[in-house]
Length: 251
Image (cartoon, rainbow, N blue to C red; front, side, top):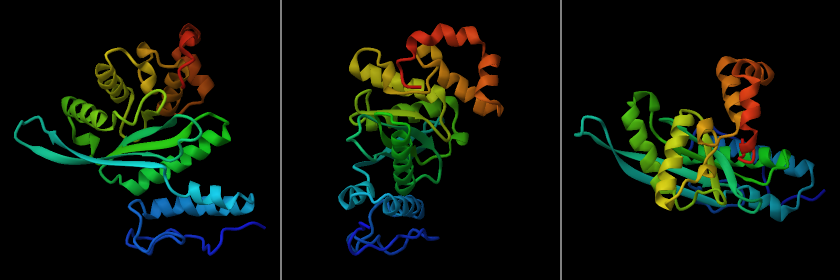
């Protein structure tokens, strides 16, 4: 069986302050966290079983691009300005544009979004979709934000990652702590910079902004805890049929 030379499977640990992964430098990688190690361990086990080419195996263990940014964020009282940390990771660019959600959570870190971007790559590959995996995150508790604060935060984050996203580059979507309203703000901010409407820059936005009807039904099903068929009936079959002309947008 083909295996990687000098390879030892990585095991997830209870702390980020662990030894670096085998095959890397002695200095731990910036995204080397327990969640990232879990994703790599899953990859290693699968790659060994499927006799994956060692060079491809090694390449898939790390993200192709990782953006780390910090920016000032003003609260509604106009006197409090916080520094917020944010990320956008693109795991694999060779399969086409990358695709993955953006989460707002006070504990999000680079290792978490890196692991999630890897899992997104596997999901796209298993479904034979022409996308690589990506993930983004902003380290903040969205439940503490007013609507105005949430909008300012989203628009500033979008401006920080605007050079690496786009319909042919990287397509964000909702995730933990974000929703269709956040996606609409991202689309609007991106479109303002381009000078014309770019609805394909995100998915998960409102149907009125040329979103696939399937995404609306899927979100409704998750929210209500029902099947897709039931959600479709509750939302109205006529609405789904009416929106078929925008199904070219990835759901």
